Length: 504
Image (cartoon, rainbow, N blue to C red; front, top):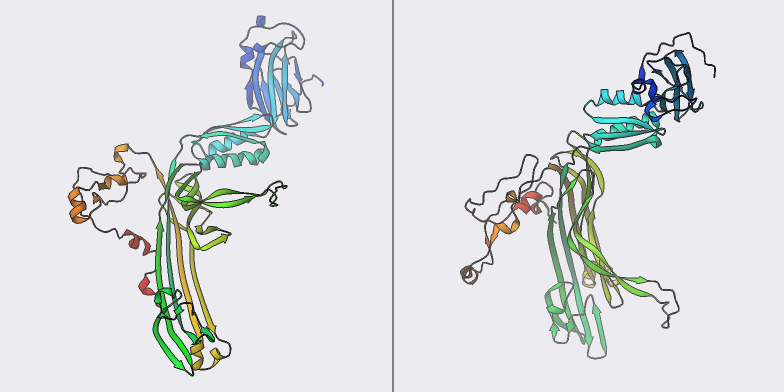
């Protein structure tokens, strides 16, 4: 490289690295010798954006300047005390400056990479309150410091990726404080079932020579109708007739069923922002599982063995909250309510394996502190009609009703799942009211004379930590009058319709 001075000034006035550390060292601290540099003359590092330039200025006269790798950076002398450095490729190299006595003035590390200088300026103008720094290391942008929230950190990482690409950003930022988030989930379900069954069952006998049945005749015996043995319906009219030598034992079967069930579950769980938490209130039931063996067993079953696995059921909740700023909470929530359903059970040999009735949801929502959102809902209506009849005879008008039985089933289900996140803080132990504190041990006179198994002390709602502080509880206050808790019906009014609105 020609060691000549470029006469035309290039108009660059910004000096990122002044060689102050080198100039403070006296001449006797340097050892003469070409190309030798002591640690005391190391002047730090300078970041040069790719395809951009920086000017390095010294307070002494520079006689020569050498660059370690010309493929990474190139240098041009501007004056006897300034060097122009141009970034050509991603990487690091060193710049060594010599004086006229061939002594090392300074050694500067040159890092060529993305434009972290513009990145710092943009972060400072867009988010001035963030204590975050961006540095260039081996061609990658390293983000370090303390971010105010997860959302702010994510925005700064996205800005860095715009400069260096997704693969060249290293996030070492930490959060100033970890916010605790409480999630309340409400499962509200109403299930209505109605069914009707009407028909005629008859038993025909002719001594021991002939016997026949129309409908369900399993409950007919020689001593008349036994209602306890009729399992499908109720017989409201029963009669025995003799016609042409036949004894007819007939019964008019009619049954109407109505059912209503309500389910309300309200699990509550607290977790740190960005951390996953899970909760299960229920149990586990065993399920036999056949494990395949390696074969060669004497009994010919291939060496298979039966092991037991346990499946959970009950009320479970899993969620991952993330506070993204301005009290906005990003929620990955997975609530589930399951119960053992004998109707869905199966039998394998002598084993009976129960089934599960499950209501499950999995979604991602964004809510503010204290807001509620219905993340899942279901309205299901089922209707089924069954007609059992004797062929040909059951199709005869009017008289055919004696040879057929009709039934129908109708079911309606309404389900609503509501989530409510809250920003909470810990409270003192004496501010928490436990459920056991609302019930006192009974006295012997109450158990014997009044049949009271317990004495309620306080039917107030359980205490929950809130952002504004806990709900106060005064243990010295007199116990209130106990009344039946009707909160279940009240809380379901908004989510379901009353039974009186349905007519079947």
